[in-house]
Image 1: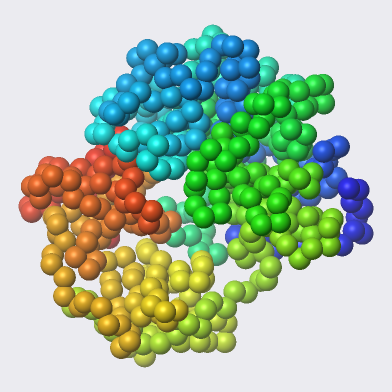
Image 2 (image 1 turned 30 degrees about the horizontal axis):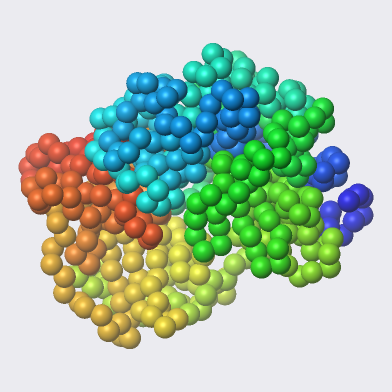
Length: 548
């Protein structure tokens, strides 16, 4: 595939990048498209340093976070090929000090597939080894193989296994085994202070306690050093495209294979089910659509950076996207690949669309329009969703509280100070919206036919509140009570239901997402004035905070 400047697909890709960057407010974006033979298109927009007005170009380095998990997985498989380890072996064969409250020993395969039943990890410790050591002190998680639960700490453990087996630290190891063999000469194998001047400045939302809305202010991100196997690499777009090209070539690099065929198949095989359309291999997500094509992909998020890699293995085309601010880079990479797949075979099929990259304005779903009555004696009063000139609007007591920025069909953001800390979430029955949730607030339409009275939530007002820690990765969360249940709400809006463990006096809860139980346990303690002052979420202690 050769792409010229006037190629319609090229023009569409550049438009997608420009719209995505503008819609997400990303300060700078770089992308590269590669076939099995080499890079066929590259583009960049915006600034690597906004204050200094330094533009992004082809040599701009970005951190690319969890895409590095695929690098860790490749090195594990390389060592298995060399007979130096086995993915079926217990972790303790290589790290004798490793311990976790689990019904059976964890294997390297459990860690590779995120099915070990471990917590996600909060980066509560500055040192990888200390964070992994703390696992022995945590309550039992989930039995291995119970379900897919993404775990950064699992891949940090794999990084320590690599170091133990080879006698090399992670940075030099990944350079000698992957970066140099693939010609990724400008890439960095760890994040250190010395690297900082060469990187694009990462940007994060000024307000870290609420969902980000388009136009919210951005500030330079906190800086950390790290060399963990869960993601500590940096590169420019062309260099990261070299890794994507290795995937298209089934393990082969410019100077020979870095993975044998059997281990490449193991890398990309669907080992565990993630959801109805997606599986996870070793360090890579995999989608198998009805038309027989296979897409492998992964996102990467660091403090101030977002990255995405997507590769159509059958079509022989891949895209990488790097940004130094808010952007769904993985979805954009998939959209670019889908555009090229469609151009190749003339089909209308594309991979998952990136939100906000098709049009400047998203109007929202008119199915949520209507009046919503405040339930459970909510003092804020009833609300109404109306259709305005620019889309949906939230109204209360005859006043427009602002436009509703759609996140998806049933989730919206509103900028009003009384409404900007949580997303608006609509619940439908038979396709009709009957309920509206906003943190601990609950509203319902006249069509709502469910229960209206609920027993008090276990723990009640003693645990409801805002909690903070001095951890830039997971700085804060809120606990709300709604419909007789406690819910943990993360700043970006994701929710986890809290299910009691033991007696009510224990103030201990297992976190649950929409699929089921998670490994995380939330324990409240230190009651003062009728309220708990501390919340221990697995490996991180949070304190009740003064802001709402």
